[in-house]
Length: 124
Length: 182
Image 1 (tube, rainbow over the protein chains, first blue to last red):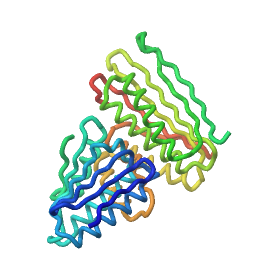
Image 2 (image 1 turned 45 degrees about the vertical axis):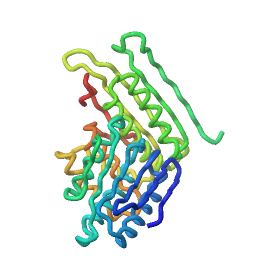
Image 3 (image 1 turned 180 degrees about the horizontal axis):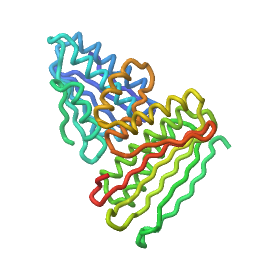
């Protein structure tokens, strides 16, 4: 997978794949103005990871100031796609959150519900 | 003038806030990029008054989700945000936070919004309702309709709406108790 550097309105996302681990980091705000870009990014990443040997995706949300419900839906779509992938293509999704951003703990908790066996949330 | 903007505030932080509400009333053009600006502004205000980062973040989340809806479905030139924080004493002390958004909308949207608000407001289990709505929203290509459900599940704020002609006013309300519980 080629490195990704997405900039869309107030959102920046970077992604690199290294030794079977996807490092996906978000900075800024994921809101209505960036929901299409975010959904496209996660769809692309999922498609590309299906061609790779990946054991884990580390999703760094620590610099993500806010995420709205539509962008949240994009993550749920991704989680369900990974969860429904063939066993050899399934991988863990580990969210790193920032305890100082109080919305993250509550909001990310709901993500675990949609991928109980593959999603973890750390740092909240 | 491209963007109507009207702002009025009143705050008396140096004096006891009993009976002295803090209120903000803003009218702005329905531009999505402004919503985050408003969220940051009210977050700073909530943190200053409530002295509780967790509760303040909840209120900012509510403000953002309500405003995005009010902007997205607006059929006119102005979206209105009103926030009031009133300190309550007595047997159940705390801050009564009221967040209102108002916009004009199409009749079709008003009907959809009434159904949605009713479902969210009356949900016996807000978490379950939120999860069900997330699943049913996945087939939608745009938007999610999840903002109100998220508010109810993640913040426990009450939600209601009134319609006057083609204007919708959505109100979220909570009593933030000392320590941040709503």
